[in-house]
Length: 449
Image (tube, rainbow, N blue to C red):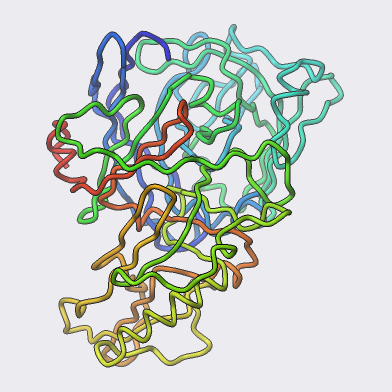
């Protein structure tokens, strides 16, 4: 970790990159010099806010789970010499950071493109470099060598969107501090199914555990976020969270996998799910259901870019049946076999529109190795936008069936992380959890959430 403090200038931006309609886009609303700093543990504090994503902003990648990225974190900074303004998406599910590049010599810099020709510190990476040959091994699509013997990276998307370009290094400025030789992709060939929305942003900042992710290159030992249940605002902290008012965290270790397996993402934030409780009753699910198999299928990933939580079939069926049994007589089931919300959520209810509150619902607790996450109240059922049957609105269970999506993984979404302090400790390879009112945490830190 570098021994200096970083400050962001005040700005607000948005990035619309999603799979499902009407989801929430978390934004960095960055206040000038909002920073916590000590000589030993410099830390950067950023407030988070939300925005509804329109349904036409649909984009997904085949090298990731198809229901990821309904939440995007964006930040503004400058890159190059002299500095050019860019807006980047913070993506905990990606490794390679990249910018949309415009290589025209006469191109003027803008926040939607980066002009490498206008930066004297821009340096393309040759394909013979160890960065290209060794550090790209976890890329879903292997790096290659282009006609100029430069390291070539390709990203492709399920909706036929794609981008490709050259791996390079340049200086990234966060506040007044410049970080030289940051590796990123300079993508000059981009095909998008939604040019209007994608043109508002310059690129993506990878934040997973890969060696080329931005957080790895910056050397941050840990980062945390906390999302409020009430207004969906929150905060992001890069660095240590040494606050006297923060309850002790319960830690669950990150799962390491040294051997590459076809269905195991080695640089994702993977933990061990050991059980599921409904109103404190542990469901009779065999431990083997939660263990990745010999192909790597069945890992459990914590993902701030997914709204809901998705479970593999046997675990989902056990949870669905128990929840359905416990809600019998208190809330009306929506009986329509053709309605499966987002292709994976087939337990829904009809709630009269004049009913201001949901009836008491059983809690659901995810039991991890060393920690638990309990989901209660409004986070149990989600009102589906625009779905009305007679005088009733449709509310769906916020746990979905991964099998219906053809995905061999458990994914813990951000809705169930609300009002939980989530610490990603990269140095000790663990995730820490503590229940907290995230809106009050923001107030304590002077963010006025």
